[in-house]
Image (cartoon, rainbow, N blue to C red; front, side, top):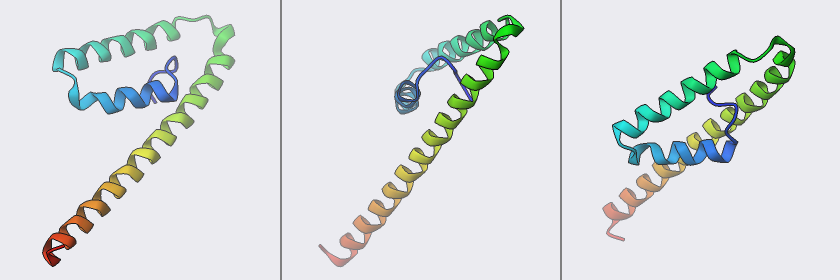
Amino acid sequence: RGSISLTRDEKWRIIQAIPKLSQFQVDELQKILEEEKHKFSELSPKHLNQLQKLEQKHADDWNDLKSISQQQNVKQEDQTQADEIRKQLGL
């Protein structure tokens, strides 16, 4: 599910940037996310209900991002196929 402190747009920007990141940057990002996870797990049980709601909202956001990514992949594949057909037809 990922970070519950980042907004959907922030997560999307990170996803888009991953191919351009160095291994060091990816490792640092993983460390930051693990630290966040640890910090949230240390919060008092009285915050559990609020954290669960926040986690659900961010899980829904994550599902939205996966759908967007899949739609973009399909669109890119369709464009690639159309380009190939035009090339074969000499257009």
